[in-house]
Amino acid sequence: MKLFFAILISFLIGWMAHTQNPIKTVSTSPTPKDCINDNQLNPEIVEKIVIKEVIKFVPKKEIIYKEREKKEETNSSEKDLFLMALDKDEFDEAMEYYQDADEEKHPLYQTALFGYFEKIKRAEPVKAKEQMQSFIEIEPKSKIILFQLVNFLKNQEKYQEALNLLIEFSYLASYKEKPNIYSKIKGISLNYIEKLSSTKSFQPIIDFLLNRMDSGVLVDFYSFELAKIYTKIKEYEKAIKLLEELKESKTYKERAKEMLVYIQNKIEELKEYPIQIPLIRDGLHFLVNAYVENILVRLMVDTGASITVVDYKQISHLPVTRENALFHTAGGDIHQSIFEAKTFTIGEVSLTNFTITGTEYAGDDQDGLLGMNFLGRFKFKIDQKEAILFLGEKH
Image (tube, rainbow, N blue to C red; front, side, top):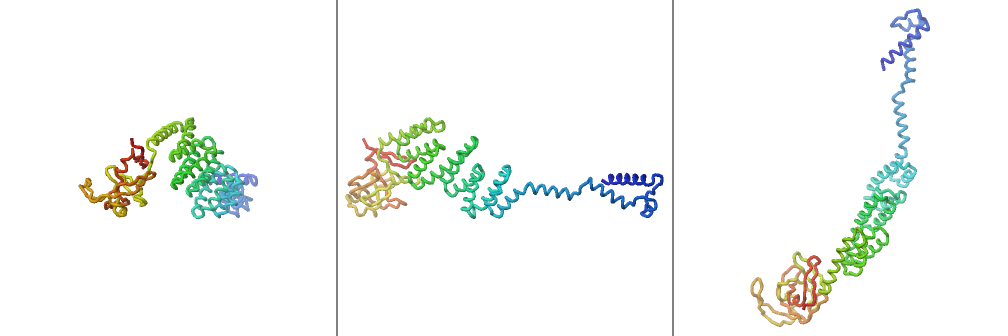
């Protein structure tokens, strides 16, 4: 730059000197006074002329920066207004800026909204839910906010609302997006079924699954889950009807066949063991509720006990049929009294004039043992996985 100034000054001085007095020689270092006498330009004047001319070609840095800032401010004015509205919690105003903005800016705005909702949903969950729903009405294809709202509803155990959103969105989704959406629908549906199962009431689950089958989305999935419920509550005919239809499904074909075999085995089992009594799991053992006449006792199922044993305190009112009866046990020979109950009932089975041994029984949450003088009257087996005592007619 200095070299440029030096060349330009020399050129101007030479040109001016030539036009004013081409013959006279100018001192290399003229003073202002000499310049006046010799009709030469004052160096100070020359410098001002040069600077003025140079400015025309070299704009100042401040001018460049101001123009750049002005341009950037113009390009980002809408973005700034949108973010400013969110920062001020002016959601409705922010939505106006969103709808007026170019579509290419929407992904950036949606990311900002995601952070905004994450911040307020902890302190104001109702407000966050309403605003997310409001935004989805404006932008129904926004996956980032839709999934955010779905997770929010799921965490609050509002499964039905979350599923309605996902199913509605599945109609708008592309072919590539559908597998991910369907996976979320299945996951939330299973969460809801698990919650309903905890109430031990199956009718709400059945109603839910039937309703979802009517939605037309993932019909095979909901049909198979319904077949599982019908199987669990032993409504086998309804389960078989669903599974026969699912045999034509590419996804559920093999599972439907396996379940049909399982149901057929259960039907045969019911014929052989028509009485099924639920047991209570206690570690490696199983307990059963029984009634000695009208007194409830809890007994441990013991196939090694020849006679049923109940704590004295529970049967002291019963008549004694024999005192000091000799019993051979693993701990040695003992003498105990034998009582007789007019009725002894377990589930739907009720026996009369049932023999019981009285003893001091100190088991936790137990009042005695259910022995072979009850079990031996039946063909029996225990399903340890399902905790069920099966009783059938003994031939």
